[in-house]
Length: 127
Figure 1 (cartoon, rainbow, N blue to C red):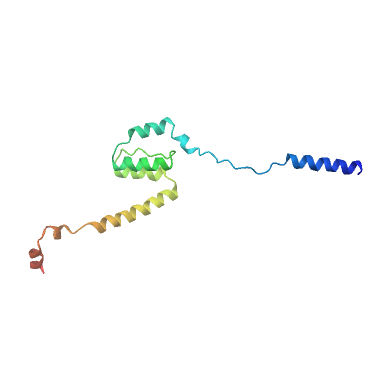
Figure 2 (tube, rainbow, N blue to C red):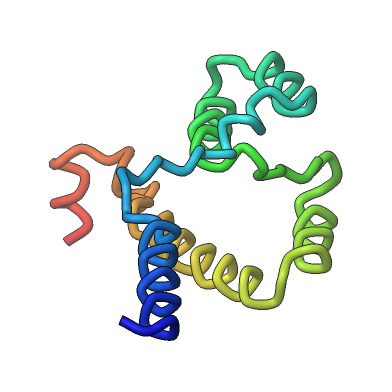
């Protein structure tokens, strides 16, 4: 073998030694649980009670600890205006759609108040 061939052999062997073979992959750490240690989250967690609102907040915070909830302490109209201004356009439209469906659902559940107070006999008299 000539020098050029020896250099080539040496180079290829050193390259093959430097190439890392795939080993076991390490799991990537989930950074979200670290957010659970933040003072704001702990403060929010300590305020939670057993009310439905607090239970829902707790579930939502477990899924996404960075989620925030607006302070809505004014009238309904003022709160809705505040939400509309501070929410993203698509989020607001999605929320309006949900409110519309919720209202229809509530309307469908209402019973006729006149019918509710009448007995079967009174209902038959009106016919």
